[in-house]
Length: 428
Image (cartoon, rainbow, N blue to C red; front, side, top):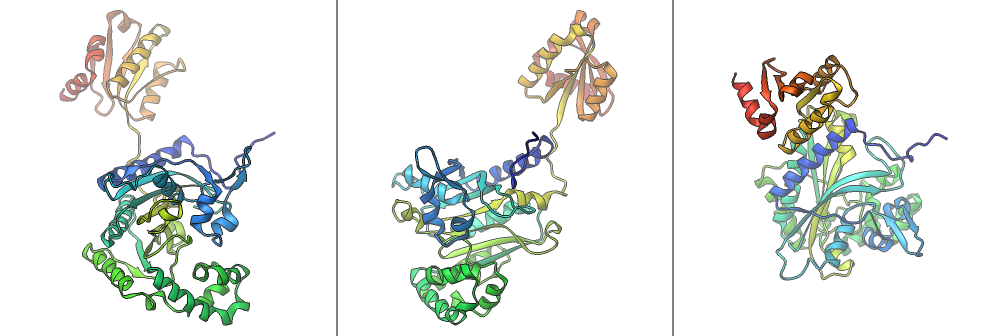
């Protein structure tokens, strides 16, 4: 029987994993500059963690979640997104306490799971990098989060970027807009898709996010939430726009953007790319927003929060053809000539690694020519050759592969300080 990976999943092979590591390491370094710290949550949670927070009418809950009952008859869900699990951990570990410095800035990386039609950049097991910041309801933090996301994408060499922002306002704004939207959509009820007919009763704002082409035509002339903002919500959104301008961040206002999850309020945003990987079409690669009621929804005190999520697979499509500094350098290749040198070769590579060098040796008993060929293929900067005569003399031949300079060195010097030997051969 031939076994294959499940549909909608991917094997990340050694020749690809270096790109993933580069993306993750670049993100970690940037997040640390903004004082974010990593949080790691379980890959599965109780079903209610996502059904309560994502919204019972959302596509994630109704169509996409991988949920099942375990052997203890507990309703379990593989996480479809990162925010709800981080919020659950925030509440369970009482990070809202008065003794804890605010804002609490966290980031996460890892696999997510949604049952949807697999396509380029979208799999059933996919990976996200995201940030979540809790405890501060300041527009400046909203803008900092957006600026950090743009900064991260630019570090990957992305230049064709567009930031789209909107506000969902406060509770009063949402209620007024909800009624205006119901009044507008009700005459079109029979023309709406089945999903949108259901949403009209439970969550009409979600119809603005419908993927149905006829629904999209109907909502083109729907009222704008910007016309129903309270003075406070309006002033907050104006501050957001002013701060973006202060940081010289270009943006567009998209009043029909609502995001796909129910927990957002006030600021929401998407960052799109028109890279060739997407056929030149603007495609969202990063999105997020503010969620001031989500912590309370999961049992904690009312605590403001904001964050974003970024799809790693989709990002890798964009940076696939770029020259990234991800090549792993090989400092030293140890060439062992003759069976008697195997033990010493093992000792040499282990010592070099302990001294901080990337070192490799032959394991296939190849002839010297084959070993040197491998060293060149791996782009080794130096070779350290030891044969049976060198073994007796307790010496080795050190060669700079870039310049061709060679020098006989003692094994004692290699074991004591190989860096000093490299400097000496470089100076020569």
